[in-house]
Image: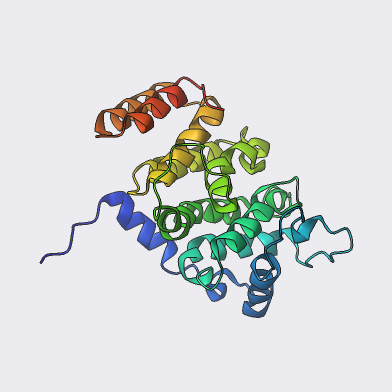
Amino acid sequence: MKNKKLTPREKRHRRDNAAVTCESMGLDPTLYGAALRYLFDRPVPHKNEQEWYWDIDEPEFEATPLQWTHIQTVLFANAGTDLAPYSDEQVGMGLNYVMSNNAGDIPHMVNDPSVPLADAMRMMRALPTLWRDCLGPRLSKAHSSIGSRSDRLYFVSCMWFDVWPTFWNAKHIPEWRDAMWQVFCEMLAMPWREAQVSALHGIGHEGVELKRYKELQAHMDAFIRNVKNDEELKNYAQAAARGMVQ
C-alpha cells in the first residue's frame, strides 16, 4: 500500500517540528524535565479539593520568560510522547496552568519584551501539534456533543483560545496575527473533531482580530461545505463564522 502523499501544509509541519528538541532550542534538558514534572506529575484532586497550583505555599518554578517560551515550544511539539506517561486529568490540569493566567503567569511569558519575535513565532508553529499528537487523539476516544463535557482535558481543548491571553496581548503585531491564522488553518484541517471545535471556538472569539475578513469567510465557507454527516459541527462552524460562540 502506497503512503498517502503529504499536503504542502503537512510537509511544512513536519519540517518545522521534526527538529524541535531541547538541544535544537538551546534548552537545558534537565530544566525541561523538571518543568514537565512540575506541571504534570501531580495528584488529581479529590472531589471538593483544589488543583495544586491554588496552594499559596506552592513554590514557583524558576525559569526566565525565554526559557518558558522554549519549554512551551518543546512541549507543544512533542506532547504526544512527552505527555504519554500522564493521565488525561493530569494533562488537562497541567495544560490549564500553561494556558490560563487565572492560575499563573506562564501564558504571558512569550509576550515579555526579552523574548525575540522569532522565538515566539517558533512556539506558535509548534502549537497545533499539541492537538494533532496529544489532545485530538486522547479526546477522540469518546464522541460527545459540543460543550457537553466537564473533564479537565476537554476544557483545555475547547476553551484554550477563549481564556488564553497570549494572542490577545499581541494581536496588534502582524506576525502574531499571521501565526494565529496558520494555527487555526492547521487545526481545522486535522482529522480530530475536537481540534476543529477548538479552532472554531477561537475563530468565533478572535477571528475579527486576524484582519483577514474575506479570507477567513472563504475558509469558513469551504470548511462548512466539507463537513459531512455532522450537523452539529456544521452549525457550530456557521455560528463561529459570525462570531457567535459562547
